[in-house]
Image (tube, rainbow, N blue to C red; front, side, top):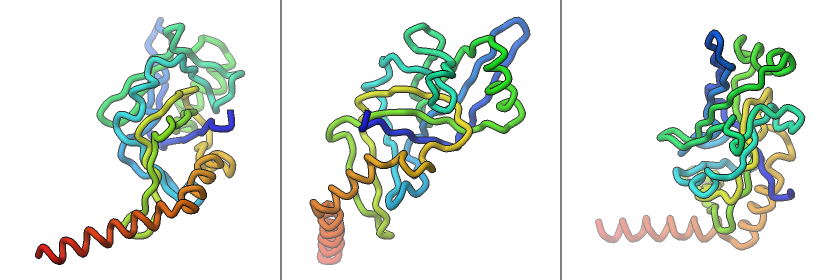
Length: 198
C-alpha cells in the first residue's frame, strides 16, 4: 500500500462507560478546514465532502494503526463513522477484554491518550496544491478513494518521518510541473486586475 497515508488530529477522543454497558470510544478522526502541522515542507487541509465516497467502506477501528489491536469494524457494526459540521466522527463499541482495558481505555480515562488518526488513500485528482499569501505550500484534499482505519493513537501519525512520504512525492511533482509558480502568477494577475478595476 504505497499510497497509504496516515494523519492525526489533536481532537477530543474519550472513553464512555455506563454501568452494565460495553465501553465506547468516541472521537473525531479528522477536522475539516483546519491546517495540519508542517508535514515536511507543506501543510494540509481536509475539505468538507472529502469523505463522502468512503463512508460505506469496511473500515477498521485500531489502536495506533496496529491490526493486532482491533477495536471495531464497520461491517460488524462495532464501528460507526459519519461526517458532521466539524469533520469525521467515529464511535467504537470497545471489546471487553483486559488487554484493551489496560492498553487503551484506562490511559484514555487518565488523559494519556487524546489524539485520533486515520489511514486513507486520496482519489486520483482528489487534491490540489497551492501556495498561500505567506508562501506556504498547502495541499487541499477534496476527495478520498479509500478509508482504511481510524482510532485513538498515542503519537500523532503525521509527526513520523515516513507518514507523508507519498505526499512529499506529490509535492515534488507539483513543483516540477510549476504548479506553485502558476498559482503565484494567477494571484499576481488577480491583484493587477483588481488594481486596474479600482
